[in-house]
Length: 330
Image 1 (cartoon, rainbow, N blue to C red):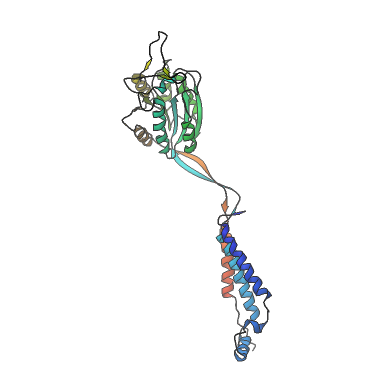
Image 2 (cartoon, helix red, strand yellow):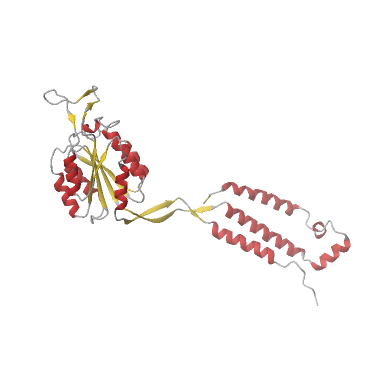
């Protein structure tokens, strides 16, 4: 057992000390009525039962004792309280290929994507969120959860060097996203593909079409600019070059991303320097039909003050109604 307000228990010490004072005090009828003269004393003795007064006082003490225990907030055991939330299952698929280090958006494509996704996750309400990272291969980084704080921590740790197999396989990423959902029904499921759109395989449209047939929604988000940007190589503070030694400029492929969104019955968005694009994505998610997501909220302790309060009330009422007047003999 624990107590929510354990400092209240210190009042029990005061009550105990006062009880000891009364207990060791000379206990006779004259002491109790020491301030009265003999005539009044004899009259009260005939009218009032001193034993009844003692019992009445003990009832008051017991009432105050249990009232103090109740006020301290006793808690016992653990409790799991079911909570129902309405939302959708959102799987964020984030490109971590080297081209996401390009700085044609500030401070970089990946940093801009993480900034917008951070705001999006903070504004979710009841939706479950999952994160998949991909480059040449794709991996489930965070399973579906309503723990948004954990999702933000995972998001913050994403870097472009976390997947050794470089490249951009959009089809692999979408297939991994589909398997991240935990229920067979495609309804209430949305994929958010965040990338610069450089697809090195070209099978993503077919995957998006199959997902849409099953009821899923595939949204795409372009990260970058039309002009493109150079791809920095952090190891030697230079930029990526092709086999002929020419600088490689990475440009956003709007066409492929728009085609994927169209095939997936979703929308196309853009993370740029001039707009908080997460707001548009949030509005799109909020317009979707929501399902009831059953979760559980854990409470460390279960309050038990109610019964103790009732016991306290019973003692106080009993002390109030307990008779102290002597029964007159006929």
